[in-house]
Length: 193
Image (cartoon, rainbow, N blue to C red; front, side, top):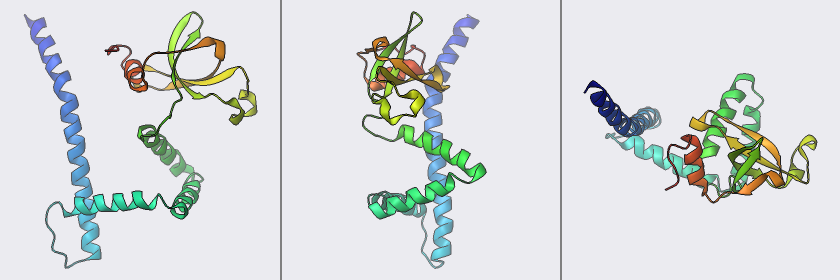
């Protein structure tokens, strides 16, 4: 009886927790952007008629404007130049590079990884993502005509390995990128449907 109640409570918690955390994150982002933009608006225009939500609206307009500006080649070059400066500052480069890599991972780009493959290693089958078919772009020690660079993620987003694998040891996997990522990150708990 007690085991059944515990299992039911755990099921409820697992069901509700992702929803609650998502709503809380969105709420936190909205409140934070509202506070920051409200203070910025009061500095710029002290006599501004303020109403709740104006800071968030202005924040969205600023983000949209930055997105539009990033389409201009000159702005993009200035951004890349300033980013290179950040990469030279001792503590900032570590934090900024980690944040940049995290956000780059979630940006919607086509062919972020080339394709889903299975990799044969010591009698094991691993799911991997081809990151470089053409190894001529890689450092000299990684250049290999019969090799392919493959990223093998670890479960539960712990990390992964980027390895140079002989072409004969990789095979096409019939999973889509999303299915394979979901499968690997949950350690196979969510199987292909």
